[in-house]
Length: 344
Image 1 (tube, rainbow, N blue to C red):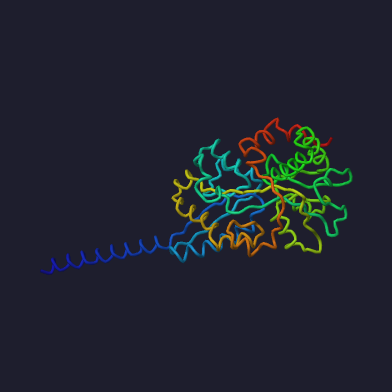
Image 2: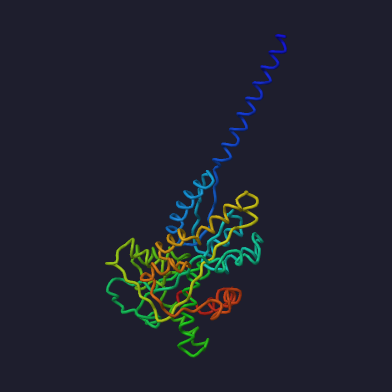
């Protein structure tokens, strides 16, 4: 009897321990520690710091899980190359679709139709290209023509590594092409004259902002609208002014989750949810507050005074899409290589 009682007690203890273990297992699952890496382009630091904080708060309330989103920033083309070379991005939020296409073509980490998976061609916000000048606009910069004058110093990044630089290039090219009746030789001469006035090509847009704002080099910075507005906020509207040219380009920075990396890390669902958050009214508010143009009509109307209207060229209509524009203008031996002669 005594022996049977001991066996029963032991068995009961085992059941209790197992039950406790299961309970602890469930608790730890509910309080999972998840880490994502967002590989992004240069000027999105402040945007994604705000997005990450709100998304993590919402995800915790919804699932009980703690999520940390780490950020990696640099020139968009340079960032794409890092992912191709092995940087394990759960999501990419780059400066232009051509850079995500490069990841598809060179590493096969996500499907070729990635842009169809989220609304607005996977571009939850837009921007444009503007000119940032010093207070009082001492060189009287009003439009693209002023950037080819011999007495002006222009700051813009390198199109080989920076997505923003490619949008800058195309905005100037498109202006020249329309002004000269579609003559590409004249457009090349115009943009070539502009680059003769560029003393340094930084690898990314934020580097160019630092050159212009903190190092005090140059008379005008060709910049993302959000980057120019952020400079006013951080350094003072008493120091700089934003000039909107007569025509610019509709810049559409895309986002995507990186399927093969997500599947390997078990982060596919949360990576998708993270990018879908950008399209919510809450996400769109954060986007507008960081000077990107929101897609949501109600949020856009609320911030309308912040975003002046101007004629905008588009990559598809005016440049044949990135699959045409990238090799033509920025590939090895392309237009940029032919017109840019450093030190000449």
